[in-house]
Image (cartoon, rainbow, N blue to C red; front, side):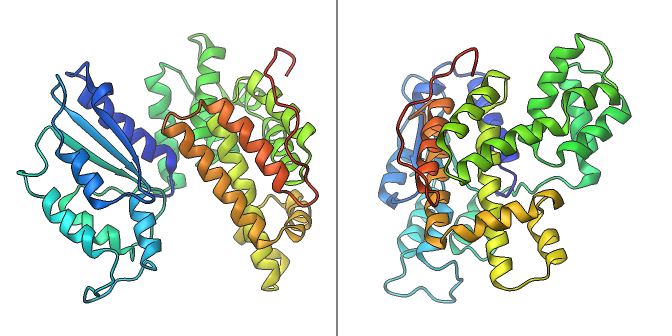
Length: 346
């Protein structure tokens, strides 16, 4: 769990790869469950099941702790109340900790985004689990991560190139991963210096993604679909575009809240982490949105992310549907009309 979704997903992938190393049937013995609305007995049934013609069974639950924490208000209570929705999960925890219920062949993984330390459900499961929090890398850690990721690709990065990447992209590991792939293809085994990074990973790239996000929050469906098509054709990862769209709405929420609290402009810019050249634009758009519309937009983004992780849609189709839905939610936005079709021209 944690704020850094890239590290969370990589940790889950590592668990899959470790189990699959000696088990060709893992895919058919893997269950992915939605934590929202999941009943304790349903989870226990999946955890207790024996693998079919395989050595392992993998059960992945998305968002259970967050959903339970919200149901209970995220508060710790000294004593369980009669109507406490977590009491059934305490009983389930005891059974999950019992080898008679959960066989050694089952690996149960709870996958979460950021959840507070006061989340009562986390306190229930943490004692019987290996609980790992993934926070955004600090500036000091970022350089080491970039060099390690480059070595895994046999990409030769100069120290200046690594510093430039960290400066231009920051701690967004999804974006860094994507750019390292591009640099590897560009370098062809040669060393990559700061000049090459400046050429290939420039502010112009960020501006193109801003164009997409700005068109979406403005409700300009035609412009948004055109920008999305061009970015995908240029090789941008759909997951990165989803991240950038989510970031745009996060900035709208922060700026709207700070302006309503009459926070001074300099402090607003620092707290919202909006680029100085974009503060006025973001503030104007934020003022047009209601809180209800912003909550709906966040829900749409979450649904798009989960639809891919559960295998219900491929990442590009999910992104396309999300763009249509978000444009329709924008103040003055239109309902979805023509469908986007990817082409060489974008």
